[in-house]
Amino acid sequence: STWQLSDRWSLTGGVRQSHEENRVSTIGTGVEDSATLSKADDDWDGTSWRFDLEFAASDDMLVYAGVSTGFKSGGFTTQRRATGEFDRFDQFDPENLLAYEAGVKSRWLDGRVAFNGAAFYYDFDDLQVRTVKFIDDRFVTEVDNAAEAELYGIDADGAVQVSDRLTLS
Image (cartoon, rainbow, N blue to C red; front, side):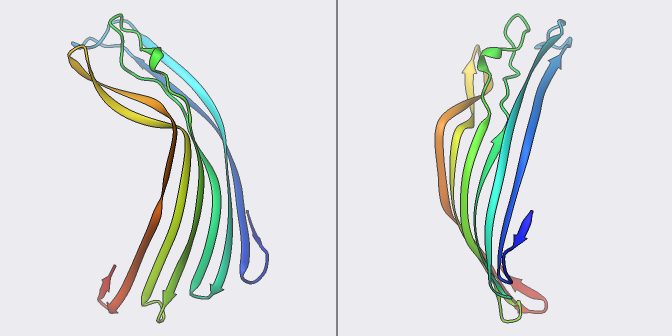
């Protein structure tokens, strides 16, 4: 939802409730397959939200700042034990994110020049990290949770319309 506070200011917010299920099953007759039906399943719930404040400095410039959360469901490995059962010991937890962003979107010279820039900071809890290991004479891919992780930086792009047929970006 967006609330227009004035001609230049607006506030946007939203909420998402997620329920995610992960199920896998297999049965087969290949060299690595088991003739026994193997199944694994689990489910996760998460709530994400977002708030953004925008200021239209002019018709050609927007300044914004926002804070949001994110949720990515957990899961489990699909590698099987020698018995053919899925290895439930490698189950991983959901990933959660708290994100901050501030930036500007602008155009000049009747839209022939554009510049967009943003600074961001992401704070992860239980970041899901994929690793490849060599176990029992074969490569195995696993997903584990890192305790915490932070990511921050600046993202910028621009474009200049040199002529009606040439734009540099």
